[in-house]
Length: 199
Image (cartoon, rainbow, N blue to C red; front, side, top):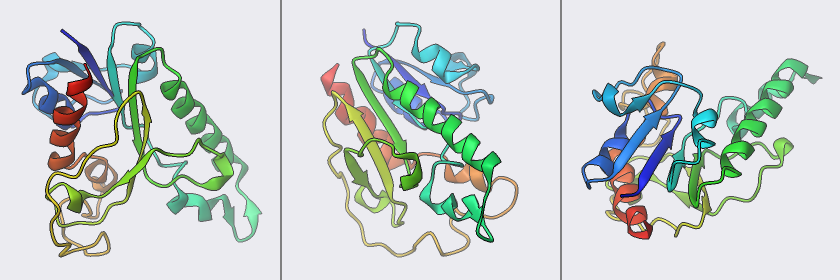
């Protein structure tokens, strides 16, 4: 049976979607999991786990905090280069590229639009939650290695945007970043349903 690594995932949404199809899937993150299945969670550096050589497919969700184009304005606060932030961005790029270069046959990495300054490879596809049954906009880029593009499963009318306060993934407070990093269930299901077919 194929073995699947869901790197940088504490919510376990993608992991559980693969498990529901009968696959041996594991989430991996420095944080403990919140998905209710610690027996399927590897709490360590996802990059270390990615290079163990034991996986057939990896879906990775590396942090976008320093790579995202949305945060690019912080690089030149008041016209002055923030060297510390630039260094963290370069470290994040190194992590991203190491995941993409792992010796795993099938790889998918998701992230929002990256800042041009880091010169990441061109993405393979852009997806939106409203293409998978969720009435929200949250533009997500996918970098794919030996995997087909995801096909929309349930295109719905967009009733809200990310600017609307109060939706589950855009609440304020200390948990905002954690909430926004969770994969929409419809997308998680599509990932498992469609990419499991290549295994």
